[in-house]
Amino acid sequence: MSDTESPVRLIDAMGREHAPATGVVRIVSLVPSITELLFSLGLQEHLVGRTGFCVHPKGQVRRVSKVGGTKTVDVPKVKKLGATHLIVNIDENPRPVVEEIAQFVPNVIVTHPIEPEDNIRLYRLLGGIFGREAKAEELATAFIRELANTRDAAREFQREKVLYLIWKSPWMTVSRATYISRMLDLVGWETVPEQAHSRYPSVELSPHTMGEVNVVLLSTEPYSFVDRHIDEIRAELPPAAHPQIALIDGGMTSWYGSRAIDGLRYLRELRRALRA
Image (cartoon, rainbow, N blue to C red; front, top):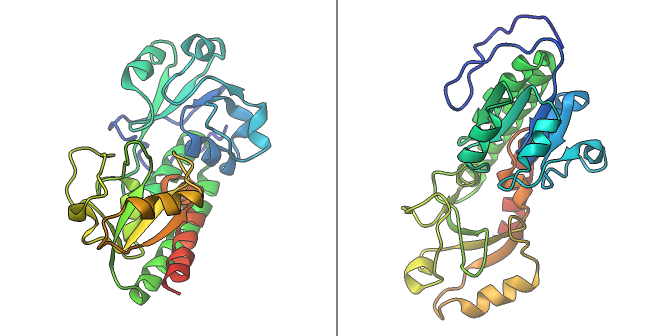
């Protein structure tokens, strides 16, 4: 790892400050998008553990040991890997599991991007900790460029109300307090409902909910919505509701890290395609 001193304070989502890593570095990532980001930062040689949902970059990630799921972690297996650093996310990983692992992994890095701009801090946090500052700045520059392009493109679009579905039986959506909602907002899509009791609330396709919805987006993850679900949704809608219904690549809206750079471009193109 690099011995270069970090130019910024390396503070994670819990407000914990981290020192640049030295000596042997062995990383376990319990966050799929972070696993992909570690490869983008050139840290694959230090990555010793990942979840079964960490599937990108395809092919390359296969050599890294699986340690269960994001919420069903095989704690004894993590311990056997001798990790020096564990990377987790507040939304994706249960706190009790993280606290159990923290008893034997000395460095736990907590992430929790909410705003698209949080990606910049994420690049610099991990780049600073693991001696990849130059690569982190390359990613930050690319993200800032795509963010500016997206904001310029947003002037083309009328703002629309969007129901973004992530699950069925029951139907579930995202609140405006989520990263997904903030990404959609960049291209003029306001998620409904405006107020929600949780970050990922259940929702009914009722006249009250659908009355203001212009577009229904069916995310390809975590539920694998496909074309046939478009007809299912349309059959359940109130008679007066006639929104546009389309599939959306959930990875492009929910995966922060290096994927977010392509995600911004993807959202611009999708918005233009649906408008056409």
